[in-house]
Image 1 (cartoon, rainbow, N blue to C red):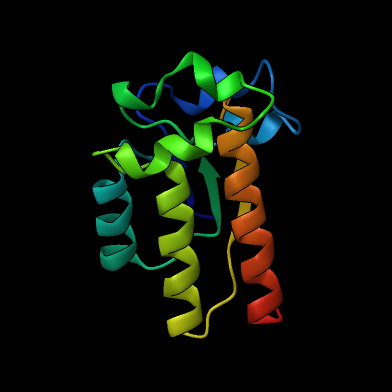
Image 2: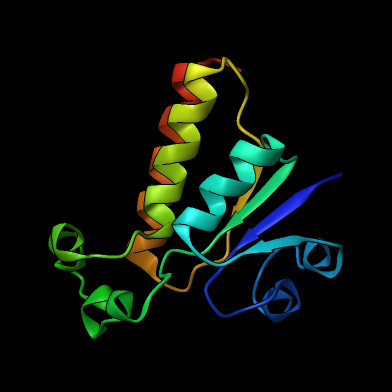
Length: 132
């Protein structure tokens, strides 16, 4: 089984404390740190069996506004120069739709609640489009 872990600083073992199921993070993972690493991995290796997403992949993504109840953080997306885990999720969906592939099993280990919800809603919508 091939597992891909997207995170700019953490390793899978770091997620054991707060993710459920936590035992999956004790397994072997391929680790990518950026959007471009993610895309390159997929283009070179195809879609893995499992992907775990972080949202914030660069210093500019870390903002206290991410915890704003009014989702002001969403308005910051257009100003980001670096791509996020949300961009990776959108890319994965496009890739799977274009190639008529099911999405892999996925987890979202991001601590950013707005980013987590954006990734989740994108992947759930993609599942509906794919019909798998």
